[in-house]
Amino acid sequence: MRATPHRQGLPSRRLFLGMAAAVPLAAATDLSLGARPAHAADSAYVMGYFTESPNGTGTDYGLHLAVSTDALRWMPLNQNNPVVTPTEGAGGLRDPFILRKQNGAFVVLATDLKGTDWSYVSQYIHVWDSADLRTFTNYRRVKLHDMNTHSWAPEAFWDAGRGQYGIIYSSVNSSGHNVIMVNYTSDFQTVSAPQVFFDPGYDVIDGDLAVGVGGVNYLYFKSSSAQALVGAKSTSLDPGSFTVFSTPAAHGGTEAPILVKSQTSATWWLWGDTYTPNGVFYAWQSTDLAAGTWTALDQRSYTQPVNSKHGTIQPLTTTEYTNLVAKWGAPAWNRIKSYNHPDRYIRHSDYVGRIDAYPFDPYTDSQWKLVPGLADSAGVSFQSVNYPTRYLRHYAYQLRLDVNDGTSAFAQDATFYKTAGLADAGWTSFRSYNYPTRYIRHSDYVLRIDPISTATDQADATFFVGY
Image 1 (cartoon, one colour):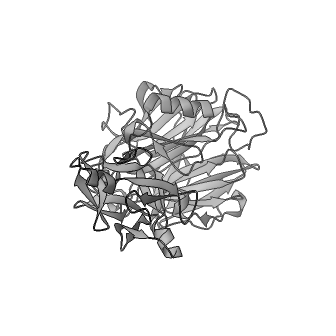
Image 2 (cartoon, one colour):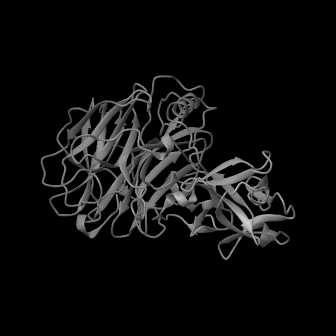
């Protein structure tokens, strides 16, 4: 959720849960994950989110899904279109959350709101059941309270002591500021009366839990006064038992924390969503939740799904990952990130090739089909998604988006060979077909082909091909 004065800094949220499941692990599992149908060799994750772009061309208030093998670089599914959309209430969602239930199946929760009409009040949340995130069944809205206020950013966790799930969400209490509430349920259809789960005495939204990590439960939330992500902890899951302990993490105004545990190491990641200017995700890393401190990750390390807002991340098995890609399909396009300006992506603007800072509209200016090279199929050509008759080609050494005129000269100018990244072999550089001593690089954010000699040149000529 983007916090605004109109809704008293209401939530953008997520909750990492006590994952549960039907199939035993092949190796010991961190208690924060609980039993789940994944094995030690699995490294796959799913993200749920909705989308907003600066001018609205990429805005959609349905449930979107992306997958990853490292929980850092994400591949949107279904061409970044929604996989399911609410049909009741406001007819849209924000702040989706995916929970794996005790039986290994999933439940999806979301805020009942379409767009940014913060005056819209709903005591309900959207709920779907899903066996596999390929089909969504039993859609309903569940009422959480009778107060004349919202139910923002729902998340859920398994409370083993109660033998029930807790649904936490943000709402305004009797003192007039946002707190995190909780209702308990066995079936996500009927719920107990609401209780205050966490109220430190000031405005808080977007609760996200890691349960049972070394005998401690961790709750991360947005402090509206600090405009930052802050942690609280408790040795129980009882309402009112959490106390603040961590150092705030923020990159500008930051909300919607997501706690993610690596399936293959001791690493934890904390994701946050900035609501200004347009919902950019940032990530931090730690190997010790008890310390309450986080190290910011270089943006080279991670890439959010295009236009994604207020996400949720859950572990998957390798089989589940494969099945999701088979069902929803990988993107038919790529986005290409700059190595030394990792907040910027290759795009065309007024038919000029350049790198610009994400996000921007039309966002499709940064989507490319890397097709077999027009002059040599061993190379690649950059076909524009939103101008499919046009390709990136060099002209007087500068890159521009031109219509393919069918000539051999055009084909040669528009063909490049992918090579190991000149600044990082794990990335990619692009060598010109007809000027083989020259590579695509940016200079003052404009793309051109140049000979490469210095370390700066190498960094300018290195890119990551992702989504």
